[in-house]
Length: 162
Image (cartoon, rainbow, N blue to C red):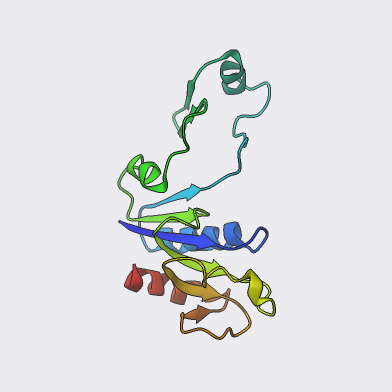
């Protein structure tokens, strides 16, 4: 299983780029899964839906199932957040896992840099396992660099370096 992370600051284009990689790998017949780190009180079930009402009533785990998909919501109730490794273990044997966020975990990562003129915002000097940088401006580093539109080249770099 290949695990590759997409990291960068808020609004850097992480989700957009993750979508591009997911589409590319899927078109190449890989079984792709994704994990997105969210901030504290995110919601996936909207107010007044049955799952929302069950959870609000006190259900600690809610599963919504249909013929098309299923989702499980688990309230942590002050338990610690699951690690990336634990979340990956919950997946059903994908070929590739695209991880958005989880900067400090040890998996390989691609950093997206929007403003190459402000070196204080670069994550790669402070993180482990950055195997590529996406920036439309050349940055002084030995890490492989790519332009945003080079999805197939970036995908091949991921396949060869993770």
